[in-house]
Image 1 (cartoon, rainbow, N blue to C red):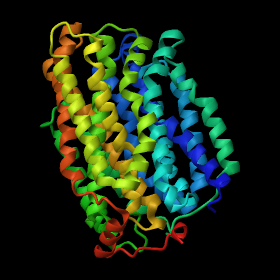
Image 2 (image 1 turned 45 degrees about the horizontal axis):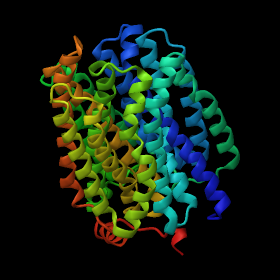
Image 3 (image 1 turned 180 degrees about the horizontal axis):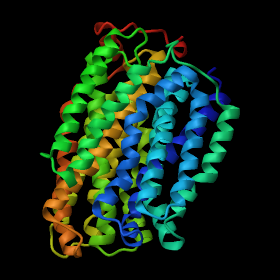
Image 4 (image 1 turned 90 degrees about the vertical axis):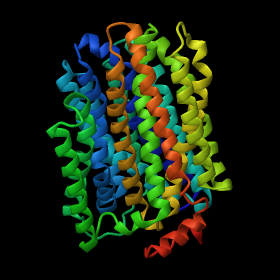
Length: 476
């Protein structure tokens, strides 16, 4: 089960799935100014172009993980990639913001199946001693997708058309689906039955909690719609917990959330992603709207920020295996907060240029790179081997909730001070928005101090919480 050819293929195919889903979070960002002009999109339309994907991605993440555990991880991975590929073709054929947003919803559903299963498929075949490295590679590929998005998207939007940012997914998706069906090992989770009420409650809870920040910039945080969504989300979350406590085969053992390691790692993932995606939403527009660069030129300049995970994330996984998860996460969040805060200050000076932004972008990029793989590694360290699929799904759902919150929060802060009338007005709103992103990353430090440094400490937490730790075959 742990031979190198088997896990080499698994890691490669999981990495490609990770790349596709990560790329589509970012590649659309570089096209936002073009979509605003060609499809006559408003600020709300632009937000929905990003958030329709992230909303469904977050709402269905636990469902995707549970379906993989019940019906077969390989089978559901192939179906998820196929759905994502078909939706990409539909997005490319869109002629209005409405049809584009609808296609992005379906893309998000496919991604919600693909993303949580990547970690599960890899953890199933990679030996424990090499698991941190393998997850680090997945983090590096996520970084590659994020880094390639602005450059690839800029080149496509400027050189061909915006539709090709979606067409490019199709041949890659077909190849991944076919090779996955042929090469991946089938595996299942420990639950013999699907927890249908739990699935429905989890999806409804995530949808309500995500809907509130998505609609807040337009409707207002004090509106009946937003307050109602938040209250409804809290009530649904309570109903979900109550059901899971009495379900014969719960989709998420509630005891995990009483673990220091599991709860704190998820909190770090949420806050770090809120800061990252919110700042990405603003920075991709800064280079085009605020500084006047064409899409491809903007993508190249963003590369100093977003390319760091390609090189740093695999090393971060190894570093976490040697030093522990906590110190690496603390270092990453500090650098992310400092870099973004520095960027906000730099853009506040009249006549700033690209050269003023390079160092803060690099600092923030290194910080982000340290966090990517280590959060996932911290999650897999604190749960029984057989529960990695569900735990990964819970973590990915939490992270995607952060993605949606990031766009909503930064857009709301930006709208208070800035706008799109001219470059100066955009920059006026950019500074406060990026400063808010820096503050959110700094807030993550309060959660990171509770992340156990070592897997042994995490296993102790699991036992203390009353979770039966099942044997990991790769530990023998």
